[in-house]
Amino acid sequence: MSMAAPNPRIIELVEVGRAYTRADGQAVTAVDRVSLTVPEGEFVCLIGPSGCGKSTLLQMVAGLIEPSSGAIVVDGKEIDGPGGERGMVFQRDSVFPWMRVIDNVEYGLKCRGVDATQRRVIALDYLRRVGLAHVERAWPRELSGGMLKRVAIAAVFANGGRVLLLDEPFGALDYVTRHQLQDVLLDLWEEPGRAVPTVIFVTHDVDEALTLADRIVAMRGGAIVDDIPVRAERPRDTDSLLMPDMVAIKHKLLGHLGLERAPGRAAGRRARGESAA
Amino acid sequence: MTPLARRRELAVSVAVFLALIVLWEILSLVYTAEAQPGEPMVAGWGTLFTRTLLSLSDYWQGGFGVKSVADGAQRSYLAAILSLASHSAATFVRLISGLLLGGVLGVALGLGVSWSRWSRRLVELPTQFLRTLPLLAMVPLFQLWFGTYFFGQVLFVAYGVGVIVFAGVVNAVRNVPQIYLDNARSFGASRSQLYQTVILPAILPAMRSVTLLSLGAGWGAVLAAEYLGAQSGLGYIIVYAQQFGLLDRMFLVALLFILYTSMSYWAIQRLFARLLAWSPAEAAQ
Image (cartoon, rainbow over all chains, first blue to last red; front, side, top):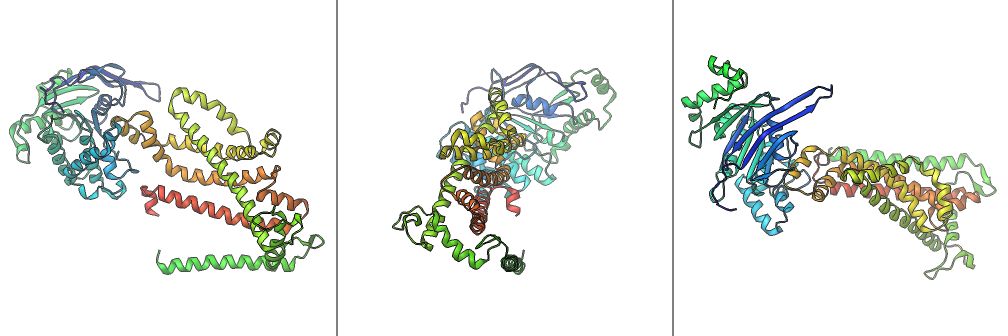
């Protein structure tokens, strides 16, 4: 991987929209002309209430859904369908049950035609980093939900994509497992000696976003309503989430999620649909 | 299941099997009507494994140093066994060729429906015609088209099998979970890689029942094909025996069929158990 200067606009969304027709014939706008620029190496959390369009937006960046308007440019090229340079981790179990763990981790490399010995070395390395070297030859059915998620993460990193898209990856996991996996993810992301991948991480968990993100983008009703930088040092522990600026961000986000009445001024701005950034 | 419970179940199965054998023997003693003089409607085990078995040497065409009855040789158990083996082999070859041809075509066309818009258009209408035509309605047509040729018999079996496999594959592909397709595509899998690494393995669990169904259809079709005028095979023995009212021979061949079909089902079960070692449902059994 080249260590050239990071691309300041590795992901660019230009007026991206997605509309569809419901079964009853009514037109619905899932994503409404969203524009967003992400510099290379940034960890962006996309947060919003259920149905706000965050998942749809991520799936469009992944190329799994086609936008009905606008354009998505990744690393200077307008995307046309999915591609190995954009790794994706899903909320539901996506590990192939018919492949052994190691073969799952090698999958992307195999698709790209990397030779067998080389891809085995890479896959084993990532399997070790996520703490699963001992189940290399196991079938996925023998693994727990948390372990399966580790396999999915190892597979995505092994494939070496410069952009990683995660769609509520830890949403279905228990509290302890979720925190362990957040650490696993950050360790791999910050891994020295390679270009830091750019991450878009969709979540509805405010604390998760505060723990992980360089920047938190809040969505509501298909549009971006806030874009907040998070400058706290990593690793962030329980104490760092209690710092005054973090608490202020948390209040804002809870307001966007509709869980807390935001202060009058912010509420007024939100109602007019302006960005608070 | 505990070993004891398993042994008890096995004991019940053996007892039922023996009871069936005894019942048949009793029936043969009680019901003594004859289809023609000397040919009982219900032949007892004694008759079946002596006179009837011996009579099968009539179908031995000679070879391996054993002359055929037609060439003036005496009936013998060796000729009978050789005869059964050679006619069974003829049936097996037709069945397996038909299964392979029908299986390959059924899978290929079934995958073609989902491959692309073009392939779907190419495949859908012709297969729609083929699958709505009842197999038995085609018997006279096949007879006139192919006569007693081996290829015609294989084609008939392949047709019976292929229709079932095709429908099964189309349905199984439709039920492949989207998450696996999305996952593969986001790893950069090409369309052919998607079919090889995701769709084919993902439809395998559904293909087990499809394979068992088509195997049943295959056995039926190979018999029907042999009724049409083959000069060999178990179906040929049955038709020949029917013409002369030789019920005991028909019954013996039917028993052989039970043995063969059971073995073929068992083999397919074993094969899929091995292929599906990864499947959570399989592991739960």
